Image (spheres, rainbow, N blue to C red):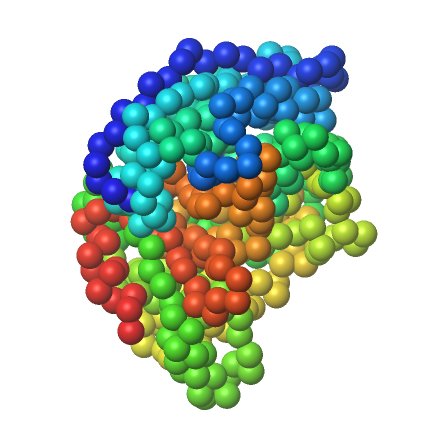
Length: 430
């Protein structure tokens, strides 16, 4: 992203309620939703379309939002606490989603490549974000902002509470919204009943769940950098590098085949323990997301709206990870992915019910694949986005990013404390 500072003038936020009356009352959140109660922000950049003026983009997108909220009405409510069990629920008040119209004093090109930005503050001008000091109960579940640029392009910025949707659900919601904006029928209607993955009674914890293990001995480098600015940086795993890593992973015959995600997760994890200068006896934890939709029998209904992902982990000492070949880390990742069956997921849901522990409480590295989620397919009538990215995620996060047609390279977006990024950058390229 260009470092030139630009100004964004924002109008007052207006609430967009559903276009017609919807269900009210309390809406159940599953245990998979509850531990992901955090705000995630994304932006979608749309270039000017010579065939269609964007002068009415705000009005079209705002009207379509009102209509899509009829189907996704929990988004128009607010988080509340259920008196009966003290858990968070959604109070379906129908009060609506804040919508902000904004104008930037520059061309869209000023943003440059948003995945290479070193300044989250610039991206945050494009999203309507509530102060971090606010209680999560006071923050709407979704906020929207459309920022017009001088060139005729615009950026849609969203701040979404992750408890409402995982990546697949978020894309289905955005696609339904975009379809309405284009005057098309909704392809995938949401399935709203999250009780189908609620905890069992009596609880049945059948597996050890290392993903909930909270590491107490945090590396000194993380403690020293906790007040640092977080910066994002993208790295490219060229096809040649992926071939090299794959040959390293398979040379001892311990691994027969491995996906690009597994390779990148294993390699990046090993790099991370070095860049954090971890001691041999310190525990290191790699966490990643596994989609559960197809793991259940029968599979979760099409359009399941909510979080249907779980975060298994690999856990070992830094010394073990450091001293063993790449195949060791690859096998750990493969075994963790394979372990997530319906029985395992149900056991984890029950574990959370009893312990209220969070698998994301401590980790060395969190990696998530964005390669197949379809963020680049969301077309509100002005074509598909030219780029999309996260605006303010947390530390030590790694996202594998979508590739262009036919490309065999793989890009990752790494988010780390500024003081730790240099060491990571030197080690990640082999």
